[in-house]
Length: 360
Image 1 (spheres, rainbow, N blue to C red):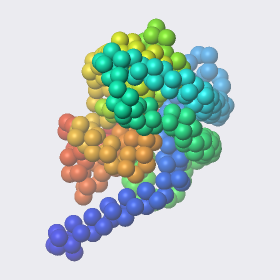
Image 2: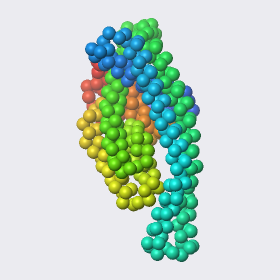
Image 3: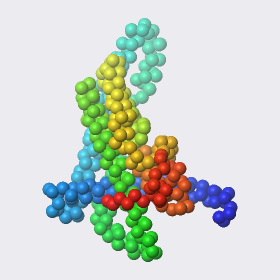
Image 4: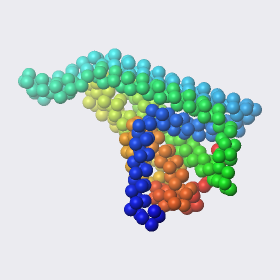
């Protein structure tokens, strides 16, 4: 079989397609579990960092981790409540927004001499009558209800995974008895932990900065629900390249309905886009650097693949998931060439199997 490249290629493609199919149909189970695993990486690192501080040094690690799980659950639930409440309020204001759009279109029609009734009716049909704001946002609210169930599973899985974290190394040693095998598994786990932890920590800091700047811009413009839109922009910035701009799209579109003023909407668009450019072109490259060491084209392809499999959550997890895959591939001689192809720059870590020697 080793001397039959065509058969090996066919088997590899079959395994790839089968794995993709399993990931797609198993999304309700796999997605919360994967998200919980990544969350555990971050929370373990956060508990270790807190334990080194004088104020928390005397607290046992289990107490610190329980505290972090509680804070994490509170933040998740608060975000879910804020999102659901905001969408309900937007839906309740939909008639006001529709009336504003109606008045703006009528002003435009009068200014440009569109006083014939037939032309005005056609203009209304392709704008305000082409969609229903109330139906649109109530549909989004239903989507947030589904997300709420997923968030509950993530919190539950995270709590149980952290509670079983203490016996992980013992289980690995018992499961892999061959010489050096258990140590290799632990080295790969530590490398994944370090890579994912550093990326998410820096990315979260960048997103908080971007959300803060966006909130100031939205608040100064008097935009409705400024806090919600700022949180949305910060959250969607986890999606590489396009996420924050997608987040900007929503408040900009709603500003048309709120202000019914083209200059105000253009001003809001300009300043929000300027914030994205400043953070994305200057701050993010300096802070993120080579944390994940993935080629830009690989990130784009990964973004497309994970979005197709898991939707928006897949887009948010695309970079950490692909980084984990690259680390695993780098630790086997047969798959190491694929890890090198995924990398942006070839480093000693990829050439030596991805071991960076870092510990959580």
